[in-house]
Image (cartoon, rainbow, N blue to C red; front, side, top):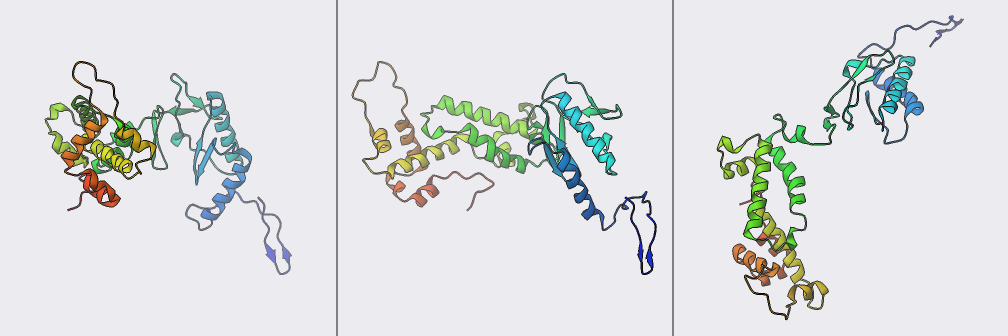
Length: 289
C-alpha cells in the first residue's frame, strides 16, 4: 500500500507504509473484519468446511491431505495480507486413529490433541463429553442440569409404555446412581449415600420420574373420547385364558400401582392442569413448597 498526502498546492509522492495498525488502535476493530472478509471470499469452501469467528478459524476436512492443504493455503494468503498464523496456538483433532501430524508451509509440525477448547466449547476427537461432565471446574449443579436435560430423557424415552417390574426399576436405579457418582468423581469406596449424591446433583429418583411419565400418558388417554382407538386399545380385555404360572405384569397393573402410590384417581385426570400438578415429581432443584 502506497498512500499519498494531499495539500492545497498539490500532493506528495507515494509513501511506503511498512508498519501496520498498532495494537489497541481504534481502527483495528474496523480494519480486521474487512481484511478477513476479503481473505475468506477466496478461501472459504462451503459453510461446513470453514468456521470463522473474529480471529478464531476452524478448518474441517475429510482427510489429512485436504486439511494440510487448506492450512497451508490459509497461511500463505494470511501472510500476503500482513497477517501471521500463530503455529503454537494452532491445534488439530482427528477421529482417525494413528494419523500423523500435519505441517505448515515452513515444515513446522502442528500439534495433534485429543480435545480442544474452541469458542468456549470442549471438542473431543472421539466426540465424547467426558471433558465436560468430568471437568472439576464445572459445578455439580450444572452437571445435574445436563443430566436432567439430556441423559435422563434419553434413558426414559417411551418409558410411559413400559410394564416395568421391580427388577427393571432396580436396574435403572443402579445405572442412574453409577452415572451420577461418575459425574461427581466419586466411587462406592467414598461411602457417600445415594441420598447425598442426589441432593448434590439435585436429581429425583429415576423410578419416580418414570412413574410421572406413565401417569401423564395415562391422563392423555383418559381425556380421549370412548370411541378413540387409543382408548379402546387401553381398555381392551383379551378373552383367552392366561397360561399356567405367574401372570406377566401388564401395563394396566403398573398404572393401578402408580395411582395408589401417587394417591390419585382416574377421575382427577379430567382436569389436565390439576392432573399434572398431582402427579409431578419435582427435582430438588425445581421443588416448590
